[in-house]
Image (cartoon, rainbow, N blue to C red; front, side):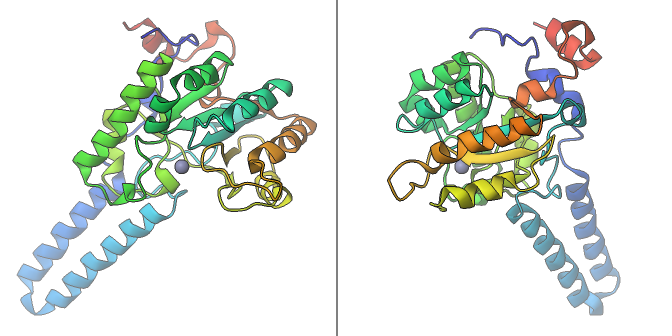
Length: 299
Ligand SMILES: [Zn+2]
């Protein structure tokens, strides 16, 4: 495996992260213990203890079903502040690579020019490794979108969830030569077991600022309006090359939307960059943060 050319290795953003278990989960454990102690100390009040635990579980479930929540740990819904200050946006393209769509997406990105982040599925990357490499060769970034994109991803236990993400991580690193640093959950759905897995694999969870719903919406003007509404520096947009809905004339919606989206971004003075590029504190090599400098120097 070769070294990523931007000089920021996998550990470069580890210092941005907190403990493996987010504060909310630590508080949940304490909440359970407190409810147990309360029930033992005052047995007649046990229904209140049960209700307290049920309320806590409902909150954890809601946090997992809400893709943009931070209740279950760190979650990017926007680019870092220093990227927004540079007027950068992040276009993220999920569920590929798809030989029927991705090559045309790459051509459109080149024509504008713009860079994007492709959250690839492990099985699709293994089926189309050359296309996966082509994404990176054209200056874009390939990141982890799970190995199988299973609809039951958010129901997995800690071991199965770890295997699912690690398998994609290994395949994508072997195919592209670059170890992914960002993860997006299938459909954005999670459970409390995800945060420790991401911590162990040094992956940052990324959701989005807005999504186009372009796996189900077939009308390009509708998808464009959703993605471009209030478009501003620091936005992370979610679109799809894999599982893409088709327009009435049978073409993938993203191909119809992307030129106008990129034109609007440019008219606002916005620059579409990859997620790894957005995490750089400076464009110049002599101004990297101490954490990045340490990461770059490590073997
Ligand atoms: Zn997906």
